[in-house]
Image 1 (cartoon, rainbow, N blue to C red):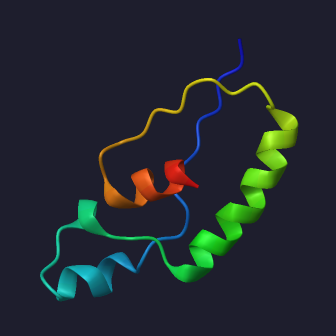
Image 2 (image 1 turned 90 degrees about the vertical axis):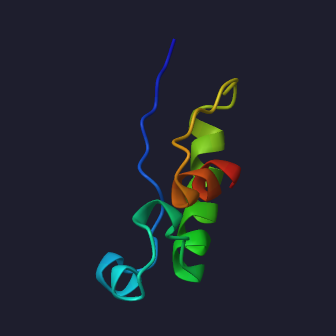
Length: 68
């Protein structure tokens, strides 16, 4: 069994998001973060072709990362 722990991709700046009065767990990925993670996923699929389960935190950025 192989287990891979992965943090979420690059999300909006925490300080800027908090200044807007937003909750950190609702901080979305940036476009650049999505693009970088999309490239990383291609490599992960080659390294771990038989991935069967993906578990994610309920935070928005983590869910968006897992969806990629």
